[in-house]
Image (cartoon, rainbow over all chains, first blue to last red; front, side):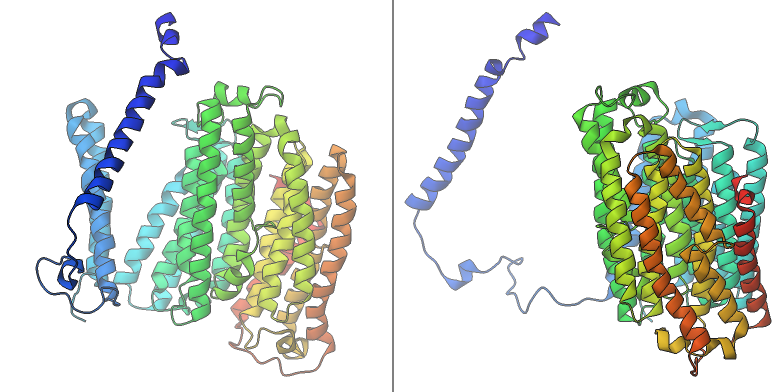
Length: 127
Length: 460
């Protein structure tokens, strides 16, 4: 406890402050130096956004079908389901049968949801 | 506890009923069956918990008050579904989903009535709110409905953020989410030992609750949302949802923050004054009856806030129980008449008494109850919440002010009665009420009148 108190005064954090200033200063100096010293050749091709080497056309902000959002949301839902399996897999033995029942119930609810969206036609791409 | 499980499961059942049941009638009957089952289960819950309170995993405490409130609110919801089930199915083509969402909201209502942990409070508020955002926007073709949904969603999300921030600060001060734990209770034993963190936390919670119950100055979303939502869902949002948030509100602020009431009473007092004056005065200028009822629900929330204001008074608990039931039934009764009309303006109601005497009569009883005329339940509801404040002895002038505001409210409620009885007109109907509708409306009005004579029926 005494040891902890000895190291928790503001003065003890001074080296960290110096390190922070140095780190930020180094970045600023290097970036500024490259901008000031480096050669500049501006052409239209160079200023364009890089799009896998293909020439870009049109605006990216076009309306797109609501189906993409639907699929994206459903993907997130079922993705989250998989995330919940990791803690269960790690504690598989400790949780025993109770844990197993809980997970089966969890999966059952998700399967119900899955049947619901299939039956509802949420994944039908063609109308 | 069983009611929570059943309401969640029945929501799923309703979703699948929409897939497998072909006719709209069958879906409506499934929903009615569900709400009756829910009512039975909550009565069984009440009998199971009437002897002693039971705590589930340190998260929920179900005692006799909680389960009694669950019965009352389920009965109100049953009344709502019985009266409106056809109109709900007529809103759009996803009828089963609307009923499913209503059952999910009921799940949130039970959570809010029984939480003993701030996490469950948060979960309950979210389960309560998210289905409502969908219900508000369920009339997809109508731009007003879309506006209502988006507005409700954005504002609701923001206020939930404030709620979380308040909980975080209180957690920082107490080190516990459990409102029954020693750490939590100890923090709020007296004002002098309370940390400034929890002071800010309480105020943030107050603001967030004030938003959910649409108390001024956090009421601005209410008229647009209640007016824009399909008329079948507005009474649900304005009654069952609102009063259950009040019960969560009173649970936290009386049981946990009751001893430090000096920290937040002045905030509530100013909220009450603003809510009463803005709700009542703005309602006077409305032309549409639906919008007037939205402002009226703000004004009524001002009266319900009195029960939060009067700390540690049994009259306040009685008042909020009676107010919940009476206000819910009266609003449902008025909306049941509004939804039958073609034109929602005052002029649209001209001559209704000649054309549909039963509708005009039941609407009159409900409106009188909203004003607080003796012999209707609304009188005793207002009497209990106001006398709770008088009993407390602080800020008596607010009571005088509230009575004055109730007098203003008489103006816009009586204006509807005047249109129906003393003006001649067509009173064009959107749908003709069936005998079954009329029976239910009369039953509704009878309950309101009965509670005006025997208010002790709702005290359990």
